[in-house]
Image (cartoon, rainbow, N blue to C red; front, side, top):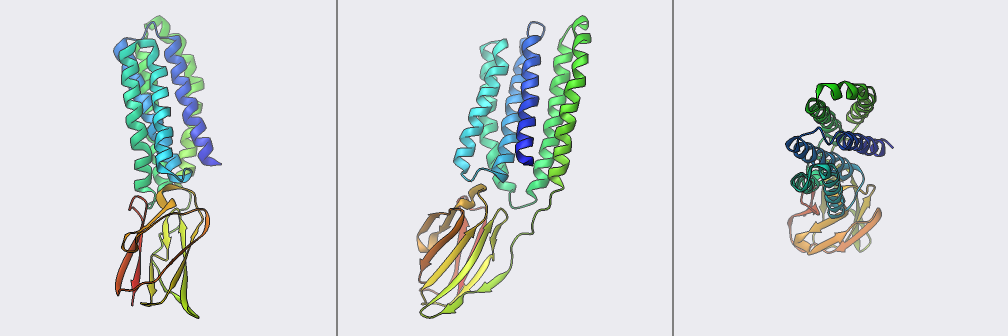
Length: 274
């Protein structure tokens, strides 16, 4: 799975930077060490947070907690050789990245998510290369000659991640659902099915008859993002959607439009009662 490969290579590059920082710690100034800890912790939490929130984790709260823990751990470990200030900067940056990563992923998940993942991976590679150059420039000339050989290890890893970014960004993303349908009238009730996938609700607008008991099937085909929660405030419905068929029953008693949304209000659809 390409998402798993992306996460692995992001962590491998971060581990490589951490190893370089550790073995050359006596030559790297504390200020540079603080900057390295901040940058790596922030970028790791942001990159992985964006990636998994778009494609893997169904609960945004859990995704945020995971990314905060990852960011804090990364910042603490890389900042450790340079003292408490570097550790503190790394931890705080990890917290910020952990908060912002999943949130950003959920914000763009309904608009070319594959492209955004690929673009941000390229930013990650670019930032990490700058960090590696900072490490090299921090060393005395007689030491920097030794580290130059590690470019033969570092650059291929970055190249693989760049290829993964290009492949991910070129992956097809289905068009957002915009069609409208009418509820199927049956004996004593009306029924309709709404597909719930990573791009939203399909159909996005459903026409129903007023005063007739209604059975809606929310067919969830993805586990990603805030679409795991359904809110229909006008009907007082707040329901967690499991993968598969989720049935919502109610009777529309008023004419007009009823809006339903995901847990964060980023995806929405409507029920037009006639």
